[in-house]
Length: 421
Image 1 (cartoon, helix red, strand yellow):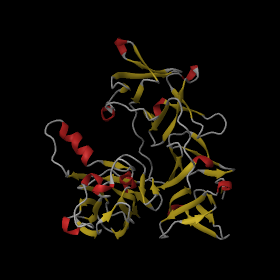
Image 2 (cartoon, rainbow, N blue to C red):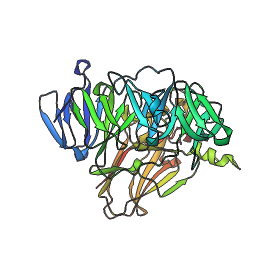
Image 3 (cartoon, rainbow, N blue to C red):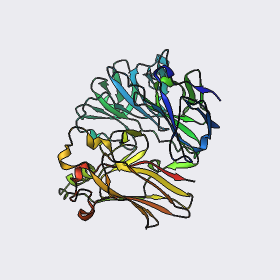
Image 4 (tube, rainbow, N blue to C red):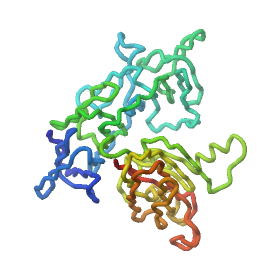
């Protein structure tokens, strides 16, 4: 296997989470390909794990994020890849057919990648600029749509990326231009790929990019090489990698599934009229692979890149179809409630996690508090048709402090929820 060099001068250890071991395997270097992973420990021993059993490889401490560029954007591709970088004008021959992205996180040399427009789903601003009415920036079926920072929408067909911005062909209305300085987002009328149920990896980079690679990935000489399902050849320096997530092995990430049932009961009465839905989304959000506030999931200082963020009371039902043997997850209140802006006088949040199979309760946690050890659940689901994950308020008589926490602090997460085949 190829050696994955992690820049050990700064003592960056690797943590390999597997299905079999209760705790991650810690090492100082590893070799990896689509057949297996070999971890070299500080004691000089070697641990080998089949790739299908590997859930995630994390770098501890993670590399620091690069400074923000002038006008960085995040490109969402049809295969699920999210790539951050600066948009450039493509070569004349490719105008209107490709978008050129400069991303030093991908290449040590030029840092430039040309992406066909038919592989792009969306381009969103990612430099921290506040976008007014961001919740109204939505995809319009059957057409391309671009948005200015003011919220104004231009409908039509994405004609080209230029050095200064984008051009939208509006038919009889002519061409509309939006500079990168004023561009909030652009959605392209492409279909999202249906990925095969096969081994893939996601390279998560320090700049926030997440690159989906097919199983033929290779690591050598401090570089991760691979190809995205949409056909892009990618070269990533391992010094830029925060974690490598594995998909489609002996398990499925629940956050990659579409729930067949969603029930949300807000802890405050809803406003009436059109504002009701927005209020419900604020009080009881459902965020895949994010915390309820939209951050990377964190429990007791450990980050998780896969999971589901909700607030009580929320009930999510997923299809099983009798295809899985067990369900496991780490459950807790996200560390974000411990930061400034929440205030510890009202508590740190507390909820109850419940797991149901075909409507039957197979697990119920004790009250789980923020800042405390999360609950770990592993239950059999063999033969089950549906899995239901419930997060509910703690009854007053069971509250750890004798009185309920303020429900705004109940930022619950199902971290790394897996269905094991």
